[in-house]
Image (cartoon, rainbow, N blue to C red; front, top):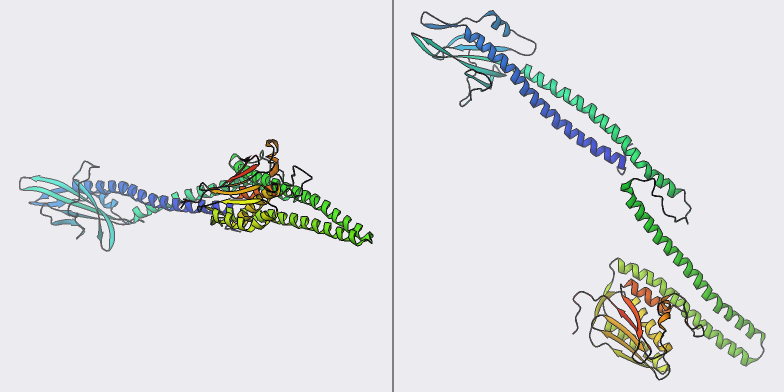
Length: 467
């Protein structure tokens, strides 16, 4: 059964169309070549007949007469393919023998160069039939007669058509057999070429759903290796993604297990005590633990949102945003928290800086950077949020900073340099993921007052300029 989306049938269909076109072109060419060959062969016979008649011309009593020999008459006899007519005209173009009204040569008909004779070949119509005619001029030089006699011999074209059609039919038959053989060869060749794909398909179908090993390359053709390599590369990335997800789930479960166990232990301890003060302290600690769990859950949700946002950015859904305005809005929102912690929060963002990004993710990035800076800045310290015209964001504090040997690891998920400090270890990891989604570069530097300066370099939007 013919399948439109089948590679094998599609190739055979295209090849069949090509062969049909070639057969038609070859058939037409064979017909015209056969007609030309038939004209050449039969023209020679026509000329020979005309010469035979010309040889029988003679003068009698001052007039020209034609003595047509028996062999010429035998040549003109009826046959199964067509009929031959002749006409003999004297030097004054008066009919002296043969059939009347045979077509004369059209004006401008050239003399043939194929034979040493004053002969012209041309096509005409006689008695409603297509004929091929030769006009042969015979010189007559007698004392009382001097000029050119004309002998015309015409033949209907049935024999020529039959010969041309026979050559065309023979050519089409041979080409048809050759084409059929070619299609069979192509069928088996394509089937053999597709066997490696069948083996790959079977190898993939036989695998378990969690089997992401690379596909073998040894059993495929050279042209298919790039496809298999691309699939293996995709599978490798997919396996890496699954491994990261599995590791993240394991880390998240581990991080959630400890505070949940602490929260449960506190509640059980409070339930055993009859002291109202102890019960109140237990509830306060439980509330703090719940806040930390809520913060951790929110950060886990933020990581999930980052993946969706990164996919949206990759699909062209990024928006044109003013980084300075985002920083101002975030600064206003974080100002009460900074005041509560006794830290001065300053903003340096005087000019619009345009870039393309996802606003929710960029707000998450700014919030995490500023919150991290506030958390590590002592009372009376300073945090500076700065946006430059080159689409560079800087958050600088005068806290204890981060040692150089730990600056790469702080972007890992759940990594905490000081386990005694409260936190989930996800803040800078989230910042790093958002930077990768926006093709931004993040780096850590020493602050002017000995603290930490985080610098994020974005890709400016086309036509970005300061105003």
